[in-house]
Amino acid sequence: MFSFFRKKAPEIPAPAVETVPPALVSATPVAASTEAALVSSTATAAPRQGWLTKLKNGLRKTGSSIATVFTGTQIDDALYEELESALLMSDAGVGATEHLLADLKRRVKESKTTDPAAVKALLADAFTELLLPLQRPLVIGEHKPTVMMIAGVNGAGKTTSIGKLTKHLADSGASVLLAAADTFRAAAREQLGVWADRNSVEIISQDGGDPAAVSFDAVSAGKARGRDVVMVDTAGRLPTQLHLMEEIKKIKRVVTKADASAPHEVLLVIDGNTGQNALTQVKAFDDALQVTGLIITKLDGTAKGGVIAAIALWARERAVKQPALKPLGVYFIGVGEKLEDLETFSAREFSQALLQ
Image (cartoon, rainbow, N blue to C red):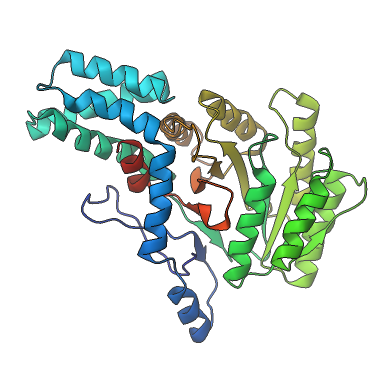
């Protein structure tokens, strides 16, 4: 599922060519035999197609609502008004909806399209272009260890996502060390311990220990033991829980004390069912931690999916206002509880699934 070669995505991918973004880019050389084995283990088209079917099923409610807009016989103001309503109902938000409609009208004018059914394909192109900057690979190997902080509210699937990501990394040959710094939620340490045992990786934890101290010990141990990746599981919290948000800021400061260049990735796990609240969470955690990547979970249920457009528009504005920050990426999206239900994000695939 992980490829160890760099693949530069085109600015706007050609609709006829589907490219799957690499889940992991290794910045360090690997032995020829190992590299061959890893490349040969890249996910085949069939499993990927099965996963895409699950994604389409999860987003079917939104896709059906948008599809009905294009069943008419002409392109007029009524069509755009219906499309506006459908996009807003998909949780795309006002800003992203206005952006998409303006872009779509430009494409329709330039292509001289007269068939409403063809407008749907143009909308998919507009959606893809908006989401494309979020399509970024997770880079491992520029630092050793690569230190990741994982954040998210309770119930978003944070610890489960850590377990799945750990499995993928371990299967790709990366040595992983986990830090059980979620001392706020009952049984969180035990849950992470189960994933550590299942994946045969080490875990640093303390009974009732301070989260920042656990994080410091884990980064120090990762450096001393030569681990490739250290993942720090932080306590799930709401952005309104100010004392806990201050605690997670402290964890980041302490991690930097253990390794001046860390954390190298700050991943936020968000629930795809939470609508515009997901964007609120991204903004709040970014203010506190400067988020570098997202894992969007639970797109197999009643998720509307349009909120990713709002996130993409916000990320674009963020890049203009704060160019020194690392650009935000969506590294993975999840459509279920199984290990294979966590996959790399593709702007084109997501757009096609949403606008099926």
